[in-house]
Image 1 (cartoon, one colour):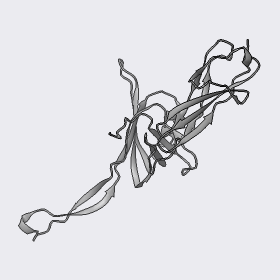
Image 2 (image 1 turned 45 degrees about the horizontal axis):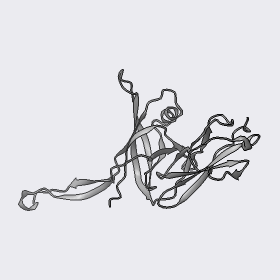
Image 3 (image 1 turned 30 degrees about the vertical axis):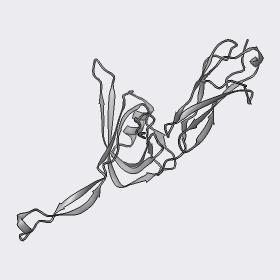
Image 4 (image 1 turned 90 degrees about the vertical axis):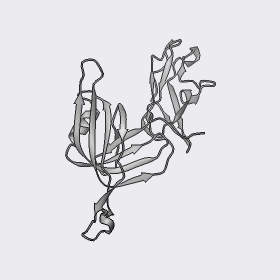
Length: 226
């Protein structure tokens, strides 16, 4: 059985402080990683046998890395990219299986496009400088914490928003009332009942991949009303 996967769940992150903090670029639709190419240096000379050209291995050339994203004018991701143009930043790509590519990059291009009959897109291109560091797969990491959508009212469904994660996880849910597990409340939605009135609701989201699980809990709702 193949271990192939689609790119869904990949992340492209940027750090402007040397790797101390990372910010994920939002709504990325395609990622092209560094190329890992090696230059071939022409070493042909006047006495090369049989008039054949001769080559020797040259320097590693990591080439460029790029991402395509939904173009949201004025968004935080656009502001981040425009703020680092022409400077060297740390970049990190996390693939669906949790493997990471880390590298230094210089933003050399940012090209929005706004067709009249299709979605707006933007492409950011980084010239990769230095080595690309490949890190082994890890358990999922939470990038944006889970949240709850809906009104905390008896009979009104609440929906768990799992947040953003690296590592292409699957999700499991546990709803809580006043910090205690609600028996059997393990779906992505929960409808408060009369016994919940006056208590706040949270949801614990556990993200899992082949390496292991990572939990993250949402902020609490307002106290449930009748």
